Image (tube, rainbow, N blue to C red; front, side, top):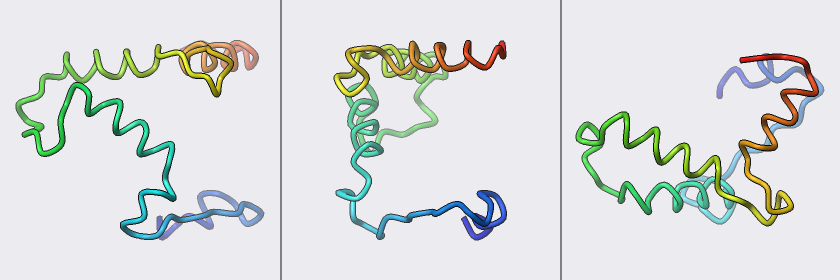
Length: 88
């Protein structure tokens, strides 16, 4: 993050959360809690298969969210991507 002014541009305002202040990172903490349903804290990550990680990622991306009008993040991403006429 030391190069954030050049990466984001001079007109971009960048905010940083304070260390050990999880309340300032609500969305991030919510995503962590969703992943922890399947991969608990302090789990030895080298023992988690790539397949398992991909399944958790898929589940989180397909989960319907109230904040998105009960649509999934994946559906919104796909919608916005189609507006740009870009295919991945």
